[in-house]
Image (tube, rainbow, N blue to C red; front, side, top):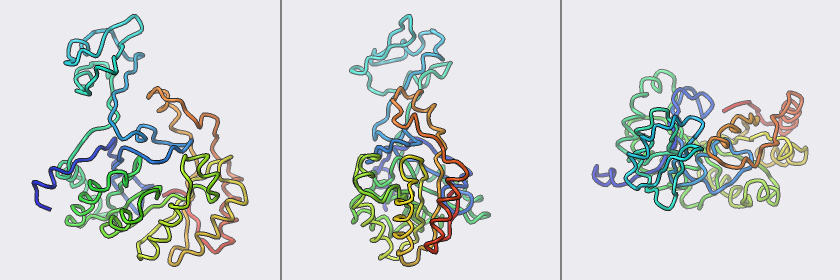
Length: 308
């Protein structure tokens, strides 16, 4: 792509995680895209759910200096006895408050970037990719929510001979998915729940398109790793485990599945973001539940691994 056009394609991300070892093969850099079409009650990246950037204020950190009030060009902030109050109708996301706060009480939930800027960050880690056989993983949120930006970054990584993985929930138009697949080396594909009604109840969408997209990737010869997030009370019943085993074992060329036990580590994120946590009562699976799941899946001839 011409450099001018590449600069014009922008995306919104909320984190870059270096030295990741659970987001694909070997040592990787994971880029987290904003926006997701699902609303899983166990979501571990709630800051990635909305496509837009927001500013979150933690008044427990506020020292009452008023620097952000003075800096805000939109006059959206005021100092109250309880800390900083924000008028959302005035806020233009100028980010002055984030930049000037000495106590780090204001935090943006993401930032906009372009392909050259993101590639400059990714290329810093290229020696680690070359030494370890790792690469870059695009996650989220859901990277397929920003297909134009994802496609150009994948192309740029390809030109830089960087291994490219896309971590997806699979709820996207099949044509989009297959176009992206032409420029990706690996898909990490979440398979959350086999029953469509249950899938809709726990994630907000049915699973027919997701299952169809898995089949489409397999038919296209795309390298694929199926990941099964293990959440007690959601998908650890024997019927679902067996349905998952039967489905994955029937996929030509796959033959394995990654188990991702629920950790519950995001509960503090919901509080910081001022969001209700729909999975507040969820608990991680115990050792016996993890072993039982693994043994059932092995009955279907699958190689089972824990982690990414």
